[in-house]
Image 1 (spheres, helix red, strand yellow):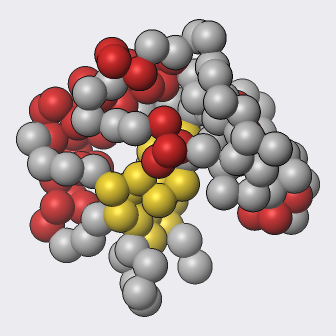
Image 2 (cartoon, one colour):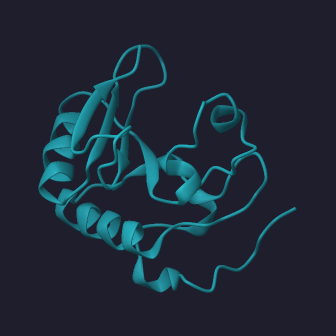
Image 3 (spheres, rainbow, N blue to C red):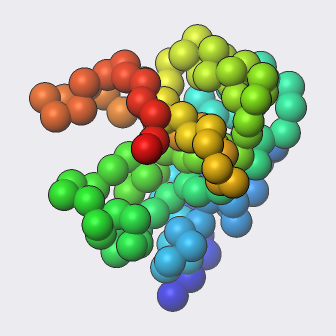
Length: 135
């Protein structure tokens, strides 16, 4: 099932991104948070280079989410993964911190190199801001 509309978002406000980049690859649903998308567009404008989104919204039934003990920021539409490596990755992380992203995950080993970005608020089980590396 593909969700084709999302009334909360006017994608014209995010000229560097397309809805297809953020659709759940498991269900086709699209439920991105407007505040997250505005923050991401501001980051993209400051970064000045293209950003390839490899993961955006994930339905709770998505295998990566279903394997977790609690749903992550992707299920709230408040996260994305950006394919980037080397100096570009460092530049993106520095700008992400300056633009208020509170969760930054770094995967810079192997073939699939990316930076995870989210803007979740601090909770008891998710302190923010935080930076982590994937194993």
